[in-house]
Amino acid sequence: MPDIPDFRSAMNSLPPELRDKLQGMGHVAEEFHKESDRGCAVLVLCLLEEYLRDMIRAHLPGAPAKLGSFAKPGQLALAVENAVLVGIITQRQADSFNTLAKVRNKFAHGLFKGRTFETPEIKVLIDSITPITPMPAMTQLDKKTARERFLMHAGILCIMMIIKTYFAKPFP
Image (tube, rainbow, N blue to C red):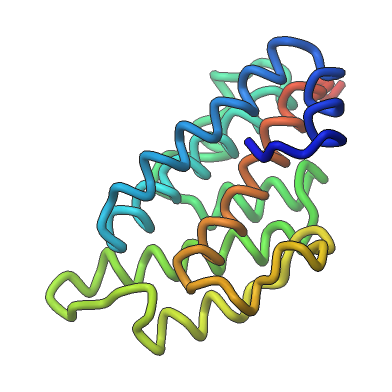
């Protein structure tokens, strides 16, 4: 996690369970940096899907029994659409999610095409992602590689889902 005094103070003010989960994201990010571009894209979306299912589960009464029809494993687009329909995520968050999934699909279904995050069709997709929250100038997205931008957008979605899951109140 960044070593910024205000950030440290904010993290320290969080409930310990939430703080620990968010701090764990740093270790997850380290693992993704060890992966090939294809491995990184595929694994990041696996994690995003897992966090989305956790968030949906936290909101649905009677979960996990109802989770299967609402957010089946391997049907990410349906889970994202359903999460928007019931107000668990915003359309902007869904658009970011869906574009990240398109990047993953380009890697997963183009096994022998030698794609990297710098491949033009991948970069175009990454560049089309609208951040789910305004990005501070210090992030300097324009100076980041396509891989770094992909991971930044995915990381922000992960953090949002971790926080929303922690504070979720089941629907009546």
